Image 1 (cartoon, rainbow, N blue to C red):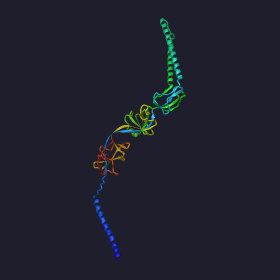
Image 2 (image 1 turned 90 degrees about the vertical axis):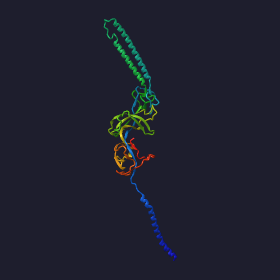
Image 3 (image 1 turned 45 degrees about the horizontal axis):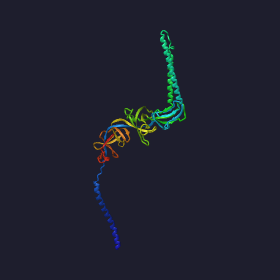
Image 4 (image 1 turned 135 degrees about the horizontal axis):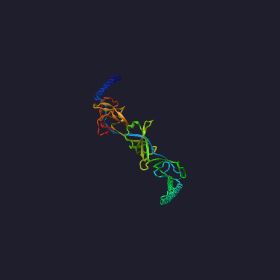
Length: 395
């Protein structure tokens, strides 16, 4: 009987305790949660960073690309015939030779003999002229002693003297030609040169006029750099002589200075581009310790263009569909339509649509709307990363 009564008591007490406990727990939760929910206020106005726009005069920097080429290519030829007796140790493919150095020598014996013969002929002609002049003096003396007698030019030796003088001039010319041929038996570099090809060797017989080598002038190099039409309007007023920086982005990262030589003066019919000729002095550094700029290298050239008055330079991520967001005096977002006149690296150059001291939003909300109220993040001088109202300038 006692066991049956105890079971009945538990069947009634347990559900009652569960109900009472649940009710008490819910009261506790409500009591704790209610004050927090009532005290929480959600601020939906976004906070943005701004920078003041400042327009300034901006020096355009133009970039072009081109291949380094020799300014002069020479097919070297022999001026006289003969056997090659020697050549310069650097007169090989890839060799560098300075202006005036002896490239190769042709056998001189015949040309030295020709000079001696020409000298002998000249001496003989001069002797004949002296003899004729002496005979002419005798004829003039005789004519003076007999003034009443008529004497011919032949008697006075005038044609003979003219003939003798002509013989002297002819001998002088032959001697000059013989000396020139002798000098041409030694071939010198006409300029600082890179030897591209050589077609001779010691013992080889050359015919006058035959090609012996191809050499490139390395005193200067040229770069023909096409300029797109949209960059042509930014070219400086005076092109010739404008300094240029030349960059070879190869393994060594060569940088050299040059200048604009001239404009080619035509517009390419296919690309509609004009081209500038850039000149770089001493590309192979024969006379300097500068890095070598080899022919065939593809390089970038950079030079100063026009100066644009009062423009703005903004990061590209602040310009969306030609629109820049600013904060007006009522602390509301306002879209500004701007004119982008050029793109430079990660920036846009803008010449209209903004005014000085416009507060440009640098951290716009995810979905900005015209008239949207915003708060401007306070500047924190101690932390440059959070400085929100610095000047956004073009330079």
